Image (cartoon, rainbow, N blue to C red):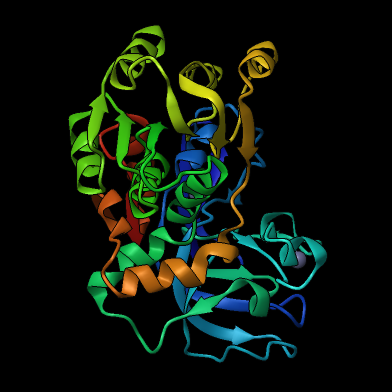
Length: 338
Ligand SMILES: [Zn+2]
Ligand SMILES: [Zn+2]
């Protein structure tokens, strides 16, 4: 098959690689209908993560089941499925407790920006639609494979409640989905921290009531103003840098919780402030499968349209250009069509 591969920082290729195959009886092979580039793919692209030269990249996709292993019972060839970026059996103690991203049989999508992708633990991981969805729904269904579920997890971890004020740090696709999640959960005020006009627009469409363009200390001062000096009831940290984490703790009101889903890179927690202000930290890698049935229902009913985060669609063979567009912030999120 042809798939997107990474060879070195900045070196993305679309090339011939071996087809994924059924390796375990619990596996399924999915023919990718749509894949996309994640903000976290930019970490290796920018040289911040180790790279296994020539390996496939891409962990977000939806598609049609092409082949199933002998033990797969709940799915059949031809089913349209949403593939969570992290695979799980959905039966082990951690899955039962709602942390499917720490499953005893955890696996990951490895070629979501290619023509085919292998799903481990297919019965536990996948969620299918009733027949082939309309083309117009594909972007929103694709967003469920990671960013919408991850934004949702940030809001759950931060304890967003009806009537409260939620602040979302990060205006990438996950942060924007965090805005949508906080609004869905009934936050009365949803403040999006964003400096980019096109992203501010999406944030507003997702339910942001206020936009704060300032960052760091000035951003903190603006949030203090907007909350009468009290601070935010819930803070969603959707970046993963030390600066964004510091901002999160600076604006969280005493007694609240910061929900974090940005993959941490060089973060030092302000433990003394956390102690003095009684501010907690919760979250981590999103248990996508836990939220999928509910989020699928919301997409199908039209309650949410997370597909709006895609502002550039390219043929899959142009994935290298997709990476450049996201790296240079010319695109918020790139959808790739095989
Ligand atoms: Zn992702
Ligand atoms: Zn499990």
